[in-house]
Amino acid sequence: MAVTHPEGREGGLACEFTPNVIVTGAPAGHYSIRPKGLWGWLPGGIEKMRTLIYKRTHTGDPDPASGVFGNNNCMGQIRGWPFDAVIGVGGIGKYAQAEGISRLLPWIGIGAHKTDDLRRPLVTFDHFSYRGERGPMLDEIAPNLAKHIYGKNVRVITSSSLSETESAEVAKILKLARRAPPSQGARGNPRRRKC
Image 1 (tube, rainbow, N blue to C red):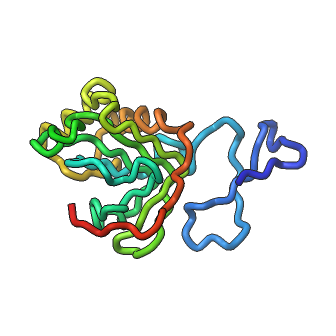
Image 2 (image 1 turned 120 degrees about the vertical axis):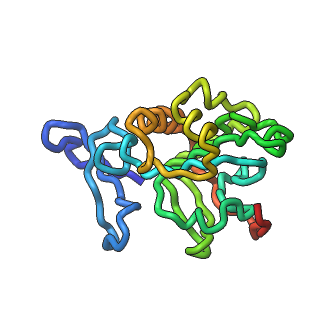
């Protein structure tokens, strides 16, 4: 929840005080100041977000209704890796083809919050965009990233290991979800299947 500065200005810019939710060990009530209208959780904004990108072989995780990543235990311990955002891209194999997500950009999550088991957490997001089988083709929106993932048969990658061009495409993808609503959170007990 953002609390507006009483005068609404700080250093000549309109500002808001936002609880700092990603700094581990921050004392309760710790706030960071960021200019209103500039979007991002880290210095450098969206371009510097630690982003997990993975190939999906099926639908159902994350749950499109609740926005919970891990509801079917997809990506297991990888969900415990440090990241601020996730991009799920459709794989190219027969399962992804049968699910109708092959080479698509089915979902994006920004502002990750991890709960439950720290090794295999459930993850919710400040912004969750799920397009499923109606998502855009990854090749069209991020051709260099698509070439890297599909050409090298990469299953999981983090933004820190991408080229500058690929990183710019990741930022472009994340911007598609910056106004998406938050995850609704876990509903009931998640099913624990391995995928």
